[in-house]
Length: 410
Figure 1: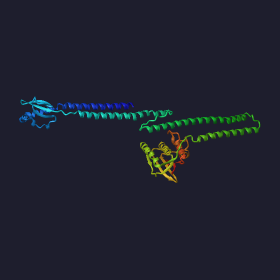
Figure 2 (figure 1 turned 30 degrees about the vertical axis):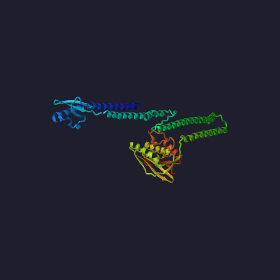
Figure 3 (figure 1 turned 30 degrees about the horizontal axis):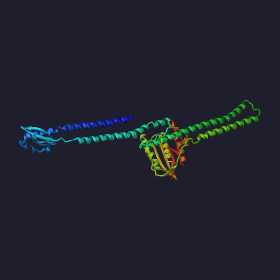
């Protein structure tokens, strides 16, 4: 904002200086034009000196060749003259040379009105830009920083600006989603901690029993074979109980820990591919990666458009991250009442044994060494496609790795 104020001030000062300079030039011209009648009078004197006939009858001289002179006559002191005049002597005779200076005040006034109008217009435009664009944007410059710091509680003030109204509305939605995700994550962590404490407490009981049975057996407290067998049966029973708790923990860890909302509607394939194609065409051109999108018919699909776009973005980012950068392609095919969208990339180095696990949460294949990631990309795609009544599968042929989305058509 400060830079804009400085730039605006410089622009206004520059315009004022230009106005002053033009006025000075114009006024100097007027001042010089005020002496022009003397120059023309000297020309007329030379004509009179050279032509005795015109001296005898000076009114016969054609004055249309002069801009300021209006009449020339033999000087008569008793004659009333309404114009400005000069008296010049030529060959012993006096001549009255009358003149009029053209008024230029109106031109100067009109010129200044025009320039001042331009100055006021410039000031108005700069004020409008400053108040409606720069000032709101300056206020928004800290929003992303606050969101990054985790300051999510304060709502973003609505702005009626036609330029940033939707942007601020979107930012506030983002803030609410982040705040909601933060709250859900805290609740999840609380539930997780409570569950672990509960399970650890429940496991302690059978462990204590096993410890007692084992100690009694080691110290020979059970003196009969029957009691020893009962103790062993007790140990096996408690072992089964502990195994049940472990199975429960494993089951809970396998359950969907991400709440992915899906709202299935209808969307055309062309609308989905428009943004994907435009964005990755530019991005991959910078990376010098060949990008190919196959031909497709504009099928109407039963999907959540935003979630399908998100799934394709995940596949494209995986292709960029784990491919060799030579080529990425998107192809299309049909199978019964479904549309198949396949994202392929070159440079696959996965083992065949890993293909069954790539859609598991937090799973990272052998080709992820030194590449950052959390192993959730394909897992999220799997969950989203399942909730949209679709499917996803992967395959590889040679060094070509492909992931195919199965989308139901309307």
